Amino acid sequence: MVLGNAYSSYKKQSITTLTPMEIVVKLYDECERQLNRAVFFIEKKDLESANAGIMKAIDIVGALRSVLDLDLEMGRNLESLYIYFTQELIEANIRKDAEKIKVLLPMFADLRDAFTQISRMPREQINLQAMQNAAQAI
Image 1 (tube, rainbow, N blue to C red):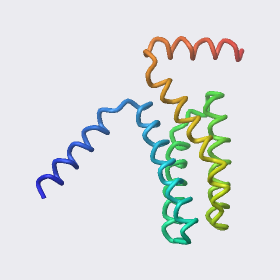
Image 2: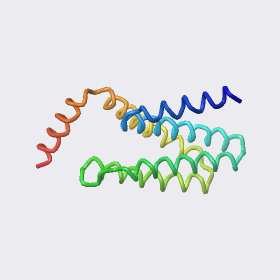
Image 3: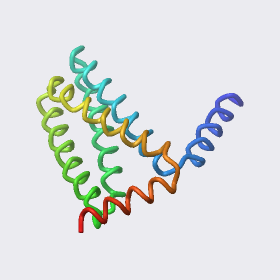
Image 4: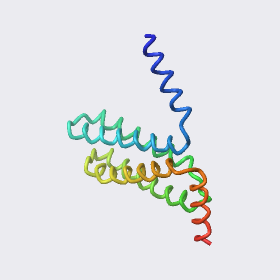
């Protein structure tokens, strides 16, 4: 029991020390994991477990959407993408359509990879890039 508490404390501390961008990457990782599980369970005809995985993925997409800055063009673009993801996942869940999920998985991977790259950039470089993007938008 002590080992379980130690692991729980470790996980809690590791999450609280992550940067916001690292948390986004972790959310994408978990979303992909849940969708891969859903595909597996659909193919095994375990529809209850497939539903659980898809619903967790939908919750994660909702969490990602809830923190977007909609004053920024990137935030609005991501919101449109998250709405699309949610609609497709709902339909995949209703139909238990593994192929529909498989189409979405590379998109989640691409977003995760992009946020991983951003999370590794120095803060000054991120701010400079944001200012350049804002200037181009004007």
